Amino acid sequence: MYTLDRDLEEHITELSDGFIRLGGRDTPFTLQGGGDKRIEAAQFHQTRDPDIQERDELRNDPVTRDLDEWKDDPRQYDFPHVDTIRHEVLEDRAAEAEQFIRDLGLISETKFGVDFHADGLYGQYLPGIEIIEIGQDTFDFLGYRTGPVLAHEVGHVFYDAVTADAGHEESDPVFKTEQQRTEAKRISERLHGPIPESDIDGISSTRTSESELFAEVFTSLVIEGEAADRIAPNASKRVRDTLIDHFDSRIRLLFDG
Image 1 (cartoon, helix red, strand yellow):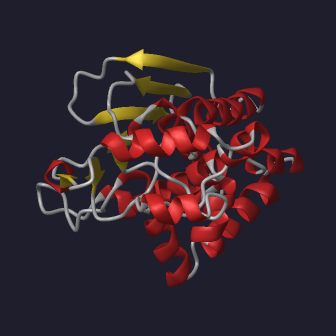
Image 2: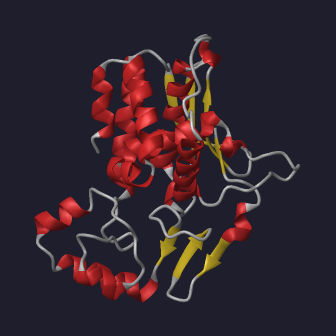
């Protein structure tokens, strides 16, 4: 299940350069807007060789909001929503993962545009009836749009298929070290902003549970594999190896993006 933590709204800030940010980290998923700087960056990007533009837009390099820094080396850095991966590409990559679990018979249906009648709910996996539901694509931060949300729910399907919760009583925890968990949390914050210490009732945020962290790392591996390996190499390897151990080696193809 993916929800927007109820107290994250207070972490949305308008920055002086025209960007709006969710939390304190600059990532393609937590930034929107950009004003005149983004317009100038887009114009500069269009002057680059078309093949270089296309290749650059298929990967997420470290983000900078410093226009001059980016112009000096656009192959090393990304300017938010100029040469970062477009949502349409993220959505296509997530759809490939969804088709994979459908072919395996792990789900029966995926419903899109669902009105959950609940604030902050963007997607859920219903294991009893093997259905994924994806909400309406209306939230502006990229991490909460259809592509990342779909990949996240597919991650939950895989997690249930390889853990003790699904009857594999001898299975070990996916994340075995504190380093792996720390990296997984880093991915979660990259995609969806800061993790609250507790929810509104004082209970630890569900985003720190292993199933949620697994789904977050899986999401990053599917929609931006190079970035996942750069930011969370140990957690990414753990999720990738766990899935390869349980499924046909063709699953490697999902992580080649």
